[in-house]
Length: 419
Image 1: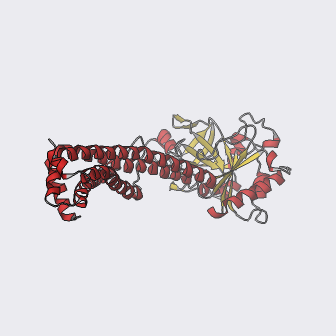
Image 2: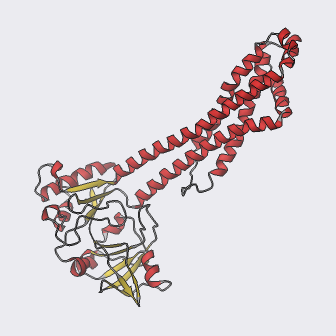
Image 3: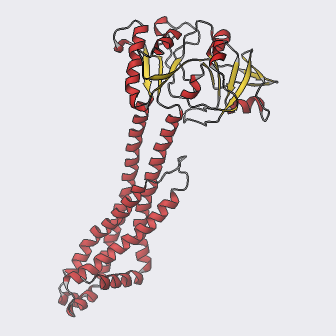
């Protein structure tokens, strides 16, 4: 087969039927572009979920009561917790400061680096200078909570361990709370009443946005001792215990240590009957990643169907082309063209259709991936670009083989007689 000659003839044939060639390439273009865009959407969705989970804290474990209240472990800044709102929760399901103290014992739990007891109060109304607002979350905790949950202070200063010890009524406000209470005023140093109790605003938290379930900036964080003294009561059980493990590699070991320690403090011998649950962020992240991977593969498979349809279009057009050029084939064979020359001519033509359609599809897919789709910012997976383009070329080769072979198999005398 003379490749340059076959290419020249294929190009002449395609340019002679520009509209038909363009429509055929359009099928390949749509297939390649769809694969790139839909895989990018799946990849972007996966990364967004991963970012949301990681935004809740690094190497985080959350312990909450498994009876009498449940709670949102990774739903936001605090979680629902296991404390009933009427304070009547059974002592068998309570998490207490005794549990926190036991977890802080390095001999029993060496893989835990930070532990934050958490009390959340519902429907706490904030009042300042005539403005009122009910924050989505009102959290009493210690200073470790900020680092565990990746909260930083944009203005002012965070409360310290001394503030917790001295039971100081200081508060850190999320940006949503600041906007609703203060507008454009500076909140630092102001005194805000929470359900009638005065708290001093010590700082404003750096905005974190939504985690997909709730506004992480719609939050007030205060020392747990101040909440116990004013809103919850001195003997109020904990809503949850938030823990940071030493590294992601020891998350499972850290979760086992937490379980062992709490079984001891709750006087239980069997984890199957435990009145608490330990949620592992690494497990949650792994599950979410696995689910999104399946979602991405499914999207790619759906888009690949359009590539198959485009390939069938290539075959259909090439069969029409062979029929239209039957006399040309007969003339070429009569003057000495070999079977391989005829085969190469039509095979190259089919591959060129797919090749040009693939290039345009890649360009279209990359452009389409620059726009938000159904609320997701696509992130191009570069393997999908190479894969889609390669499959497009293979599709052209595969679906062009039958028409090309049919053309090459014609007998010269029959081709010349064709009307």
